[in-house]
Length: 246
Image 1 (cartoon, one colour):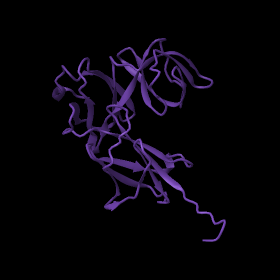
Image 2 (tube, helix red, strand yellow):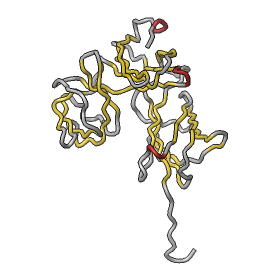
Image 3 (cartoon, one colour):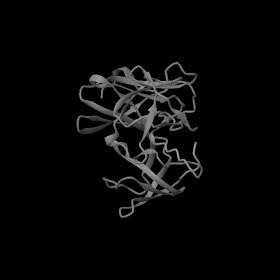
């Protein structure tokens, strides 16, 4: 190699593996990425982060298999990703045969687009104020050890609905910057809870899985039928989940 030669590599995709029931990074190392039948070469970077170098930027459907979790299909569409740092958060559902208890709500609803939920009795903090100009939100009761940056949360409006928010930056335990302006009015001290994502498959088949942590397991489920968003309070401990319809 000649002196001064430069080798340039391009990062074509970053995939972050996240356990949707806890919001924590998935550190399991038995991970397989595929495009159809072709296995994809990914480089692990710790904390559930995997990068793809010089693999090209053609759109495709990725199959992700992680030991201890349900397989997941990911639509890799570069038109929707950041050009400089294309990244995808893969929210994984723990497999039902794990060594901890889970509870699953499943079924089918024609026209269902998305399903998610927040645990009503387990807020991570509450809102103090929001500045529309710089998109900064001030918090009450924030956990000083909790990193909310890059996380999805629900700002509750009683037990009837919540607004889904994404934290773009965290300056300190009580000051955040959101990705977008709040679309709804809020009440000071309204709880903010972490979002648990479910999955929706073909023909509206869905599943939403939580961990059975004991205590109050009431969740406010947010689901979208075509372009209409609806909410339902579900008690995963006491309700007959087989009888619940979205």
